[in-house]
Amino acid sequence: MNKKSGVILIIVIILGILGFMSLNKKPKTIVPTQTSTDKKEQSFLIDGFPIDKVPLYKLTEVSSSKIFINTDPENISTFDDKNFAYYNVVFETEATQKEFFDYYKNLFESLIADETESREMVKGKIGEYRVSAAYYGENKTGYIQVHLANYQDENLNKYFIDYPEIFQPNEKLVEHEKSYGLLNQKGGEIEYTKYFTVIDSGDQNNDGKDDVDEFLELETEYKKQFQDKPEYIYDEESETIKWKDGEYDLTVSFSRDHGRIYVMLRKKL
Figure 1: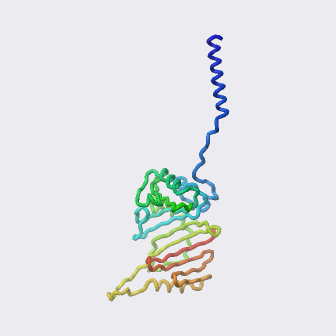
Figure 2: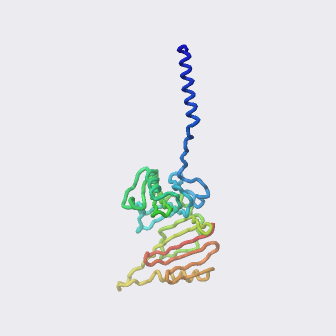
Figure 3: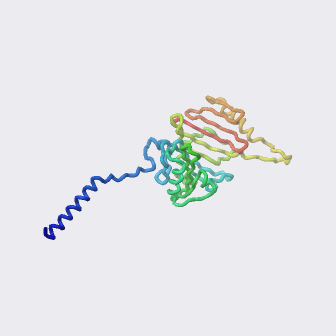
């Protein structure tokens, strides 16, 4: 065998070995994405939630999703802000608590550490958003808050275009929070909420006592206003009135302890 033939034989042998190896090589495993794009699983996620930036890890079902706008000077956000807006999503997940927290810690561009991090919540930044991810015990439920950079963003107005002005606050009430959301219950519901603080006239005659019981006045006023509405109910223990107005079910709660009046409207999708 001449030198040239020997080189050709060696090349043929090498190619044969490589071919055999390729036949027996296992196909490369494609790691599935950890976030769902299934429309059914996301059907109760409100339009505008930045799912592309803040995925819902190992999502199986969205339980509820809402947008909140809060301007209560006595209220401070998860990130120590006054005046803030955020998306709040509750969802069922296949992840364990450790998997859940590991995922979001790796997703964050930077962590925001505080005393809750080692417990049941982690916080961090993703682009323009500050995000908190909570998971309590092993209940397979994740809680995501995505705080917006600007609570006065005009894009938020779209959520309240259809808000029905059924409950009209009087001059003693100051609005401090409103929300819009989708609830995955009773076949699906739309929910609006607001809360108002009550202006206290105080002790104007300096006798050491409040001159007016504003809560009693407001409760009396609204009971009288809505008592003839369909399905009207007043619960004295909780100081709550409920009634129906067209397609909406309404609840108004008078909370003296909080100094607030809470209003909730729900209707079927």
